[in-house]
Image 1: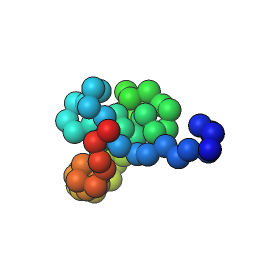
Image 2: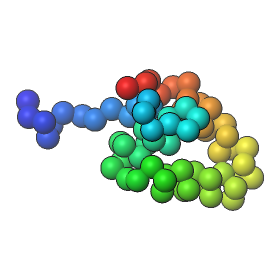
Image 3: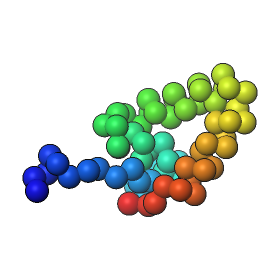
Length: 67
């Protein structure tokens, strides 16, 4: 099996976390900058009345394993 065929796992990061490492883990998985993912999360949370964004973050915090 080559490196190309191995699947990358979505995990929370330890070294680049502000609260729980969820946004950092998503950024690492997608190959994006962490600041962009955090900004998108805040904007989506604000435009969705904040509660669904907080709920999704809490669920991801519980479900996503640490690296």
